[in-house]
Image (cartoon, each protein chain N blue to C red):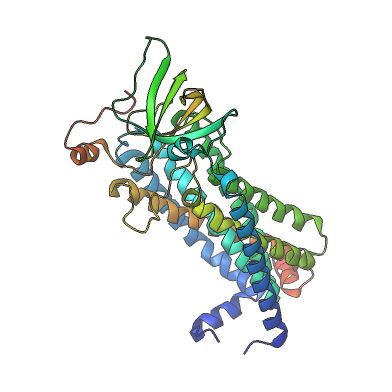
Length: 148
Length: 254
C-alpha cells in the first residue's frame, strides 16, 4: 500500500494537472474563433468574415473554374467547402501544389462585389501520400504529372 | 498495488539503485547502438530509395522520414519527461528525476528538428516558411517548454529542489500535448490533418508507411541512447561523494 504522504502528493499532482487542463480548455474555448487559421467559404457567404480588414479564406479550388481573364498574372477561381462558393482573384505566382481540386488558403479582403482579392495564396496539402500509379488506378484515368 | 507483476516491480526497484543503473546502462548501450544503426539504415534505405515518389509532391515528401518521427518524438519524450518528473515528485526517486532532466535536451532537439524540417518543406509546398496556425504555434510552445525546463533546472543550485521545480513545470505543460495532437482537428490550420494515427486506415501507401514506422522506432532507440548517456553523467555528478563513484574513480586511476 502507498504511504499517506505519497498518496497525498499523488492526489495533489493529479489535481494540479486537471486544474491546468481545465484552465487551458476554457481559455482555448473562449479564443476558439481567434485560433481558426482561416474562414470557410460558408462563413464568408454568411457574412461572418470582416468587411474592411484582411483575413484568410480557405477552401477547395473548384474544378474547371481556374481562368486567367486578361492573359496576365491575374488568376480567377472559385473556392468551395462543398456547400458555398466564393470567387477569388489573385495576381502573382502560385505555389507548386496549387491545382484544381486542391485545398488552398488565401490572404486578402472582400471587395464591394463580394469577390475575394487575395494578396497571398498558400497551398494546403492534404494528408494523403501515395505513388502516382496508385493515384491513377484510383481515378481510372491519367493524373497530371506532379509539378506540371 | 496496480497489479504489476512481481518481476517488473523488482526490476524497477533494482533500477532505482544508482550503481546498478550505471552498470546496467553500460551493458545495454552497445545493443541499443546496434539496433539503432540497423533500424536507421533500413528506414533510410526504404524511405529514400525503395519508396516511390508521391503523386503530388514528387520526391519532396521524403522529408517526412525525418520530420514526422521527430515530431512524434517531441511529444513522446515530453510525456516520458513529465511522467518521470511525477514519479520523482511522489516517490522521491533520484533516478526518476535524472531521467526527467536528461530527456529535456533530447526532446528539445527533436522539437527543433521537426520545426526546421517542416519549415524547409513548407516553403516550396505551402508557399511560406512559417504561419501562425494552431499546429505550428503549439509545437513552438513545446520547444519553449523544453527550454524552460532546461533553464529552470540550471538556475537552481540544489539539484533535488531543481528537479521538483522542473517536474511541476513539465506536468503543467502536459496540457500542450493533446493540444498539439488535436490542433489540426479542432481548428482550421494550414498544416494537414493526421495521416498515420487516424482511426480508420492510414492515408499513406504501405510502401511509404513501412520505412516511416522503421524510422519512428529507430528514433526511439536514439532517444534511449542519448538520454541514458546524459543520465549516466548526471548521476555521476550528483553522486560524486558516494562510495560507489569513488570506487569507480579509484579503478580508473589504477
